[in-house]
Amino acid sequence: MLAARGINLSKTGLHRLESSEPVNPNLKLMIAIAEATHVTPEWLLFGEGSPRPDEKIGPAIRARVIDTIAFMAGALDLTPEQERDLESWLKSVRKSRPRKVRKP
Image 1 (cartoon, rainbow, N blue to C red):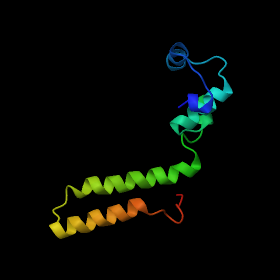
Image 2: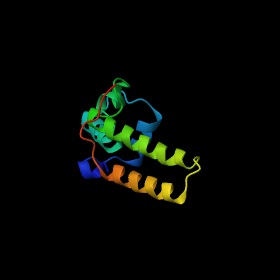
Image 3: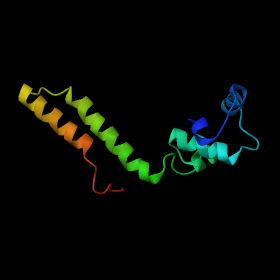
Image 4: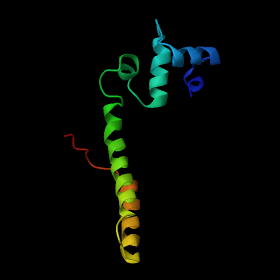
């Protein structure tokens, strides 16, 4: 992933990043890692703010809610028709895009 962003990191360099806190991190490298791992550079470097960019928080929460509904439905005593309806609804919701994600 990093090579696609023009970053060449050796196994030793990666080990150093994983095992110790970088003293003087390369900003280009940190931004590439943040993008590859879908977190914000601020969170990666300083542990501050949201770990995910704002535009990714809503869809991530939405996907988790849909997955939770699907999981919890297994505990319900649904008829075969209800199961088909639920699966159809879940499939359509996963494909659709929300018009606007409401923030609390």
